Image 1 (cartoon, rainbow, N blue to C red):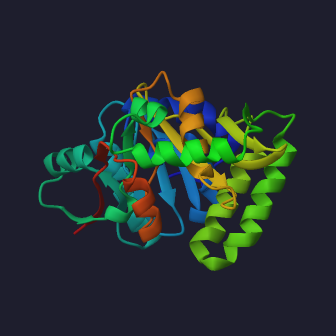
Image 2: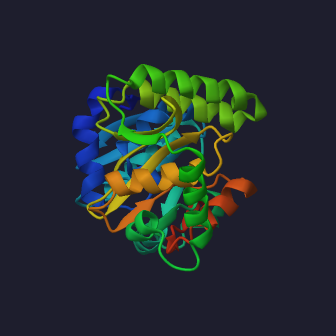
Length: 293
């Protein structure tokens, strides 16, 4: 069996370089994402022959290993681990390029099931910063109306000086929304982990104030050399257009040096899907679940 163990903040030092070597443009290949969801999904990890092995104890499934070198014996060791644990072997996320390699290394040994609710939405960074063009006209209108209604609005970075206010706003948001579904309860738990270890995760954060009150905040970090990953975006909807404002302002202040912005998946939520599609993604990651026959 593999020597898998629980993930701590200190594991960022060795895990992040392995994610970086693969440069997969998907949310699962981010240490911050892994850390935020580690308790909810029961993540455990180890390093094997230059690759990261990550397992979800909740689902008894594995992440396709990021790293460099010969991945075949690593996957074989993962299969042996599943057998030793008494369950089947499944990759909970396989990208299109990983599927092609897996079919080459293990021909006719895996079944692939598309999981579109976990496909990430990826945008042109400049499109989200400038909102130019006819397609995004409504977003510009929302922002202009917000600025007209709330002339005292301001944007500022999240720092240790305002973190307590961000945590308070986050907890208010969660109290109002988390009982709507189990998925929102999990989202709030992941958000709490990100806020608690914000500095150690080396994230970027920004917030919008209206009359001194925090009306919205967002957080993210680098995913690959050309892609930025937005992990969190929360806002008080009583402020008209606030989501459009925090989306644009956060992109302007943190994503100008990137080609793409990954705004994660919609988890099968129709309202979230419509909101993400309204910004016209230039691509969506194609994800599969892969099960050993």
